[in-house]
Image (tube, rainbow, N blue to C red):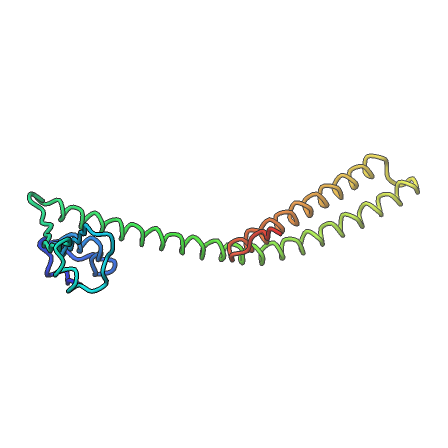
Length: 189
């Protein structure tokens, strides 16, 4: 593997990894290969190479092959720079995904604690509203309070119960979001 200093381009090192992409650096290398051709005009192919050379019906040829860019005009340098930019962009996207995952988990844990305290406080509010509705019903039956006070106490009780249900729904949604943020999902059977 070549080092970045061996590159024909004098590009700055990538700030993310400090290592150039090996596949992009391979484009700077010249390609050499040895091509071997074998042909025969007989009915049977002999297994030994010496018999093939001695026979008049067989031919061997070796040819070197070189692949060199004629007019790269900076194309390879640009492709190398593009590969480095794509690599650093992928690293930035990966880091952003990790930060998002940590934020979602932190939000889920904070929401869990917050919903717990809010539900406990709303539970006390519902208990207080139930006590007021019961006392208002007893006072109405005794003739001390009118129907308006009873309906007002019942309306406050229903509103408190609805707020408690909304908090529990939010708590369940937060639990699902936390489970999902921690990597959970649906299991298909």
